[in-house]
Image 1: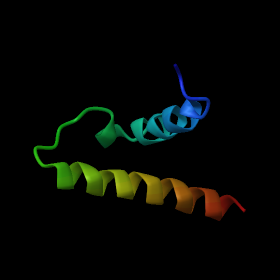
Image 2 (image 1 turned 180 degrees about the vertical axis):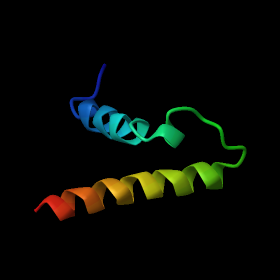
Image 3 (image 1 turned 120 degrees about the vertical axis):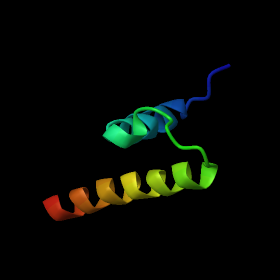
Image 4 (image 1 turned 90 degrees about the vertical axis):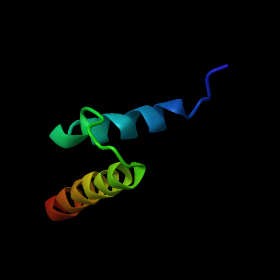
Length: 52
């Protein structure tokens, strides 16, 4: 059964995937991938705050 809130996760993956570096998994270490996810989400939040 599909979770009713699955769209939230799919939307977040879409936002992260819009960054060129995150479109493929190039990193060897999980820590590096995690750091780039933080960077991508921080960039998204800063852009949204700048528009307000």
